[in-house]
Amino acid sequence: MHKAPPPREECPHCHKQVRVDLLKAHARIHSHREQFACAECDKRFASRASYEHHLKYTLVHAPTLPLKHKCSMCDKGYRSRGELRDHVNYQHMGKTQHKCPICGKALATRRCVGRHVRRAHHGVREAQRDKICQQCGKAFRDKKGLREHEFIHTGERPLSCEICGCTFRQSASLYTHRKRVHKIFPQKKNVELLEPEDSEKLVEKQITV
Image 1 (cartoon, rainbow, N blue to C red):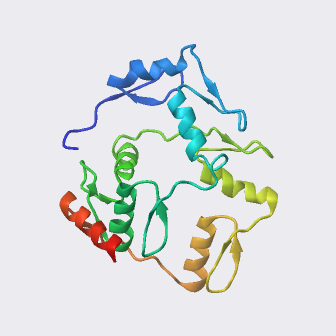
Image 2 (tube, rainbow, N blue to C red; image 1 turned 120 degrees about the horizontal axis):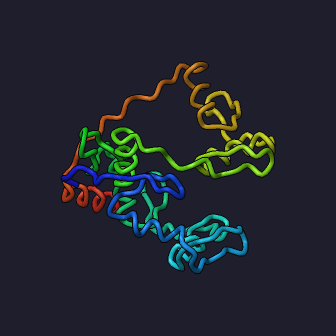
């Protein structure tokens, strides 16, 4: 939290940027060892823990995720109390306890901090384009991009404008439509930085309401 992130080096096998102190551990994923294969989706995993996590949390195998921590304001569910706390603070209270250690930018979660530091300050490349469309072969970096692209082939337009009812395949298209047609511009979010103790008090209050 208080030191500059450790240096990184490029893996000669997969070309990912890996922390220097984790290079040896990372190299083991490229060595010949037992793998755990998922029979349903043909994915392979280097450890039983990652394989079991895949079975438990991937929507293909677990359509109903164990989202037992519910937000009373919007009814969204989260796997842990910490995820719920970050959601309540950032989305409903305009507060957060997470900030970039380099530039001080307020961010929603600890994961967002890590992603921001990699992108904005280290210039680290994001994940490879390894999500492949089975219809046309186009590659994407994340599942969201692939999913929105696949709507082109299925004809689905699952997103709709709440004002005029126009439908869209991609969230970016809906965002642009709202700005150009309805002149709706999202307001800049002003987020207050919290101390961890204050953050816990806020979520306690929100849960008991």
